[in-house]
Amino acid sequence: MARMQFPLDGARIHLAVEGSTGGTTLGLHMAADAIEQGGRVLWASPEMPDGVRFGQLFEHLSLAASSRYHAMNLVGSLTQAVDVLIETSTALPSVSLVVLDDWCVASGRIPSGRIKDACTLASLLDPSITLLLISKAGTDASNNAESLNIRGEASMREGGFQIWSLSREKDGPKRAVRIEGDAKACHITDEGFVRN
Image (cartoon, rainbow, N blue to C red; front, side, top):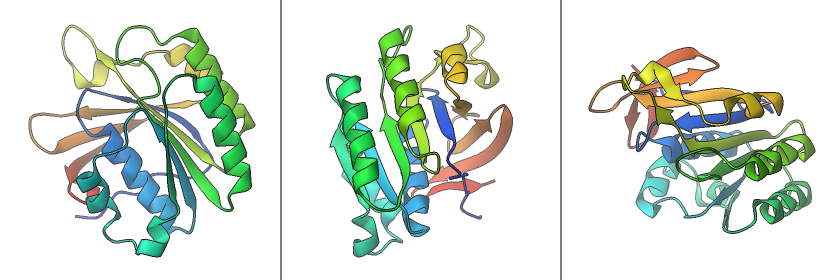
């Protein structure tokens, strides 16, 4: 099975994830790809990714290459984090991916201030840098994977974000990554996402 490749083309991406299906893993998968392609990654999250999972996804990279992954703790004001990310993305060479994992509350409406900060970050980042925001999605009453509730979708689209989603097809490793509605069936493995 071939490892999936996700576009790293300067897009602004809002990834809505069905609970516990691998959103952080998808972010780390893309981070490893960005580094493998010679780029640098800025990662901001309230909690750092699990060390074992990080090791699995970065195992194929050299220690020197892995040093191009820079993590910061995303707590408190997103406005301040945006300032730091903009400053860092211009100070460090070859930044190609910025990831904000769990950048907003896990349920309910995303506060408008958070969306405004995310859109500010999107507008101020160099257009060659891909921006990936990962958040929890809601599901409708039918629990249909194609009907995830993409929180803040209209505002994020207005801010120039593509809408991606990640859902579990059934129990087990099968997943569906939807990029602007186009479903890509895959499996989640120790090394990341692979095609079915």
